[in-house]
Every structure is written in C-alpha cells, then in structure tokens.
Image 1: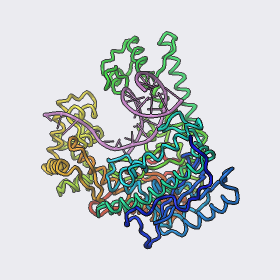
Image 2 (image 1 turned 135 degrees about the vertical axis):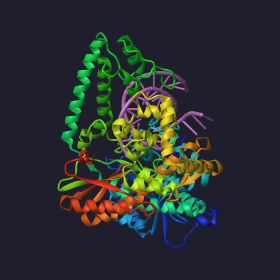
Image 3 (image 1 turned 45 degrees about the horizontal axis):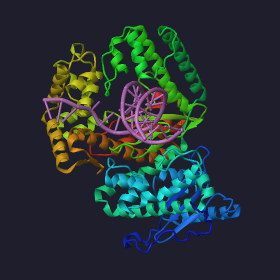
Image 4 (image 1 turned 90 degrees about the vertical axis):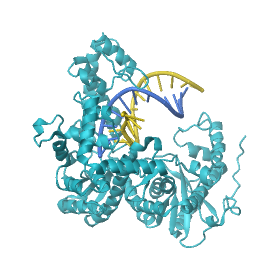
Length: 608
DNA sequence: GGAGGCGGCCAC
DNA sequence: AAACGTGGCCGCCTCC
C-alpha cells in the first residue's frame, strides 16, 4: 500500500552524480528545463496548475503553486509562486517538452507574461526529437523518449502514480489513458510526495533529453530545428489569441442542420415502414437500402457492403439515396463542426507544430484546418474578425507544382509553371488541342488527377479520382500522357528519389528536414519531398509574415497548410495584405513563389 | 466502461 | 507491375 509522506524536501530529487559530464553543463547561457502539473489539458478553459518544476545542471526545484491541506499553506504557495517567477526570469534558456502547453499554463496562471517568457531562448524536446529522430519515428511522448535515450526505467516511473489513482478510484486500471478531470490534482491531494517526485523526474528527463538529442543532432538536424524554434513563438501566439466566432451564426447553422436531419430523418423513417433505424450503423443502412431496391455491390476493406458516398454516387437521383446523403451530411456538420463551436465566443485550436511526418502542422480540439468549403461557404461564415479588424487570407499558389518543377530542374517546365496556367498547358499536351471543349477531362479533374499521379496513384486510382466513369485503362493512358508531357525530368527525379530511399531510407527537403520513407513504399518519396518542402516554405513564410505584420498591429491566426489567415486593423487592410503577400513570397529564393490574397471584411468564407 | 479498429468524411 | 499523400474526428462495434 502506498504511504503518505509529506516530509520530503525536493532540493535534490535526482541522483546527479552518475550522470555523464555533458549533462552537467553549468556554463552560460543559464539553462533550465521546466514542466507544469495541471488539473487538465484545456489551458484556456478553467484548468489550473498546482505544481511547477525546474531542473538545471545539478539541481531540481519544486514549486507548489496551489495550497495543499497538509503540505502547503496559502502563504507557502504564494512564496513558491513568486520564487517560480524569479527563477524562470533568471534563466537564459528554457527547455520544455511541448513548450506550447506549458507556456500557456504559465501565462494563464500569471507566473510570467507571454512577452517575458518568449523573450527567453525557448527549446522544445518534442520538436527537437522529431527533427533529430525523424518525424515518422514516433511516438514522441516524454516517457517514451526518456526510456529510449535517457533512462531505461523511465516508463516504469508512471506505474506507482497509476496505482495511486486506482487506489483512489479515479481510474480502473494501471495504464488507462483516459482520466477524469482533475485526476492528477486529486491524486496530489492524497499522495503529494508521490506526485511531486514524478513531476521532478519529468523535468529532469526533459533537461537530459535536450542534451542527449543535441549530442545526436547533425548540422542538418540543427538547421531545421532552428527553423522550428523560430516559428514556435508565432504558433503559441496564434493559439493564445484564438479566432472569434459569430455565436448567432453557429446557432443559425445548428438550427438549419437539425431541421435537415429531422426532415430527412422522418422521410427515411417512413421509407423504413416507420421502424427506427440508426443511420450511423452501416450494416443497418445497407440492409435498409437493399430493401429499398438499391443494388449495393461495392465492399469495404473488411468485406462488408460499402455505403460511403462514392459507392452511392452511381445511384444519385434515387430518392432514398439522396435523402440518406443529405441526412448524413447534415449530421456530420452538426457533430463535427457546430457542436464544438456552440456557445463559444472564441475558439482556441491547438497546433501540433510537427503534426505530420512530412513536417506539416496539424490542428486539433477543434481541428480548424478542415472546416468545410467545397459543400458551400456557410460553415466558414462562423469565423469572424474582431470588431475594428478584417481578415487577410493569403495562400501560396500551386506551391506543390512549383516545388516539383524546382526539383525537376527543367527550364521549359519551370517557365510553364511560373508564367502560365500549368493545368491548361497540361491538358493541351495530353489532348493535343487548346480547345477545352474537346478534352475528355476538364481542367479541375485533370488537376486533381495530376496531383494524384505525382503522389503515386496508379491507373485505376487515377481513374477513380477523376471519376466520370473513367476506366482503369484510361487512367493508365492518362498517366502515361501526363508523364510524357512532363518530359524525361519527371521520371529521372522520381527514379533518383526512389533510389536514394532504397539506399539510405530517407530524402531531405530544402530546409534540411529528413523524410524517412519505408523502402517498400519508396513511391511516396516524391510526395514526402514536395509536401515536406512546402512545410519548410510555409514555416519560413509564417515567421516572415508575423514579423512584417507587426507594424500594422496585425497578426496571424491560422495556418491551413499553404494558407495563412491573419487579423488586421481595418484601416491598414490593403497595405498589410501586400506586405503579408511579400513576406510569404520571400520565404525562399530557390524558386519563385506566388502568393494570392484577399481582404475578408465579414468572415473567413470570403477567402475562397 | 475504456481501448482500439473500422467506416466514413472534412481539409490541403 | 503496382502502389495517390498528409492529417483529425465523428459514431459504431468488438474485445477485454
């Protein structure tokens, strides 16, 4: 049974003597690692920090920032809080594991201001690990990395605390991931020294991990890590600022989609002989559709009858199909998009700075990088500029094609990409005429097909991407023609990338970012190189954009892969847009970048 | 009840 | 010869 023990002090929580010398870097700049223990994960929404820990080259420090009935009075917590502030401000360099979260917590608690902490040299062992080990080689949790690189027993350190949580009835079993709100705080109240030892150890792991990874890092790794470090403050500020929502518009959309669900639901209910049916249960839906005369044939991965929209495409116009599709779309809008926005004035997404293995960012809770646009602009009307501000929406135009032409190095193709509409040119090459009326495939599907091909699609996949009843053989022919139009440079590039992957297991982007690719999937190499290079460009562009927008009191809010949404005082809109476009375009001079942009007075919907 | 797989669908 | 890529997240279902 776990014993309570409130008497330990935390001046030295780690056996420092047996650590290698390179971890004991007492030199300037004065370097600390810092970690916070919080009641939950929503830094902007009511959670609080009860412990902070700092490790430097030879000591571990604990700060109880909230009182504890047995271990810490209000006065002691106040003293710890003030000491924490002093010690953070005394550092030159601060290492976090996932800096974004801890910085939000420290700022929200009032320990330091955003400007005070971002003035430090901030490091992040999550980003560093992804740069050094390769972003495809996760997981990147602190415990996992520490076990691999610092202390083989690190994984076990969590077990004791999990046992305490089980003893308290907070979780069912050791290893359970989902924990109730305030779980760590509640555990601290009963087992303070246990939780505090755990907190101290994490910070020590973070400090050591930084030095171990720095030892391993190549010059290239440090180059790309430095880019990540430079962009980090902007991303934290974007999360902190958040995006304003039109609450009434959310209500309006919710009411509209609820109406659609109700109306289509009632008609479908009637078609099912007034028997209840769960429209999210695919087996039930398949049975229902068959009973209504729909001849389903396409199968899912596991051999069930598929009811997804591509399988139902050929039945378009059949009443039961149209009703079902409309019902599902409305349900999707409600559950995924309106629900997380409901009754919120501002939405603070979390960005994962290296969220994708290629180096792209991802967004979650909620994901603001996949707000619907193809089915209509209305969901984007929910996102509005603050009073007195407008949005600036700027995106890199056909950046992937520009990167492809850069890597191909073919001057003629380069000119086509830079000076004309490359997809009109492509259609002309494929169909032998500039007259689009005579093309079998229009510009837009051709564009989709082209990207599918460069990402490794074969004939059948290409055909299904383009749709319109194209056969697999026609898909193969089209791929052949498109490759022919690109000239020998395309094949040479693809071959050399695949050869390098089979030889070394990776390729490197222009930002020196390593793209590890499974040699058995070497055909994804071109995509990895292009998408990764686009990510490098965007990150440099975001750095430039944030800096350039400052003069107008404007700032970025969102990054959607090749697009930046910024907020700007209305009176500077036009000038700031020009500056933003120029800043993004100056991200690299290896190839010309074209940036298109719009001022959106009312909402995000005007960007498209 | 939680974890994870699956089917499905939104974006670039 | 053939293989589209990168994500997040919804609800259902099965397993434990």
